[in-house]
Amino acid sequence: MMKYIVAGCIFLLLDAMWINFFALPLYKSTLLSLMANRSGLEMAVATGLCYGLLLLGLYWFVLPSISPVRDGFIFGAVVYGVFALTNFIVFDAWTIALTLSDGLWGGVLYAVTAAIVSILFV
Image (cartoon, one colour):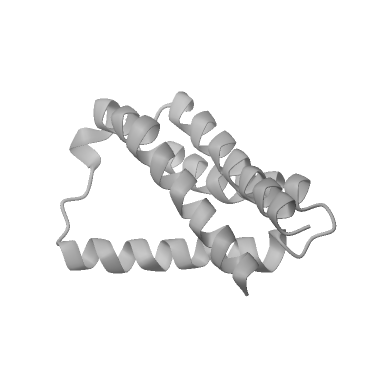
C-alpha cells in the first residue's frame, strides 16, 4: 500500500512542477483565449477525476509490469499523446510544439515515477 501512496505523491509532485514551470507559461502564451474559466468546484472535481484516472493507469498498468520504466514511458506517451493530438486536431491554436512536448512529458512522467518507485521499493 505504501508503494502506491508514494508513487501517487511522486507522480503528482512531478506533474505539478511541470505544469507550473513549463506547461502553464506555454499554454498561456498560445492558448489564453481557449482556457476555461470555470468555478473552483468544477475545476476541483474535474481535476480530481482526471488525476484519479491517470493514477489508476499508473497503478494498474505500469507499477505491476515486469519492465515498469519502459512500460511507463510507453503508457504515458500514449495517454498524454492522445490528449495532445486530439487538441491539435480540434484547436487551431494548439501547436505542434505543444503536441510533442505534452506527449513526451507523459512518457517521462510515468517512466521517472516508475524508476523512483522501483529504487525505493526494491
